[in-house]
Amino acid sequence: LPCPLLVDEAYVDFAETNCLDLVAKNEKILISRTLSKSYALAGLRFGFLIAQPHVIEQLRKVKDSYNCDALSIAGAAAAIEDQAWLLDNRRKIVATRKRLAEALAALGFHLTESHANFVWAVRKDRPVLPIYEELKRRRILVRYMNYEGYGDGLRISVGTDEEIDVLLAELEDILASPT
Image (cartoon, rainbow, N blue to C red):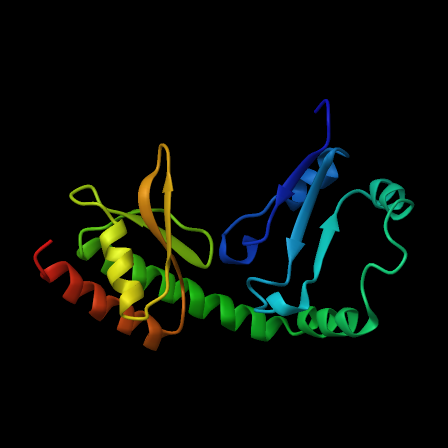
């Protein structure tokens, strides 16, 4: 590589593979991770970088002296140590994501394969914006996005089974109504 390559692995714990082996093979590959997603600690604002030791040493020379407080470090360390909780949380999210994707497909949505804690759902037969607006009116919050090349779609975070059940029931009702 002619320049550094930063690989964002914010959602890596929901995927089956990662890029850790690439760091050992190339000093220009760096991986960033966060505790915001799979550890459910977005409020902690804690992330970290994985790179070869000499790269980390160079980065230490230019980082802010106090870029993380002791309480955040203690919380992050405790979370990372509790791998049983992480694996259970991952298992639940992956199972719910699969159920959500299958149910959305049965409702006529087309989905991109997800390796995160959300799904991307589009419709080929009708615009998604009115569906989003009706969900919002019903106090079901998902994200609407319209990107060139991807069309308009819904980015739906994987919630609890109960939350997903409510979403699916409301979507079924909305889709049954005349457009």
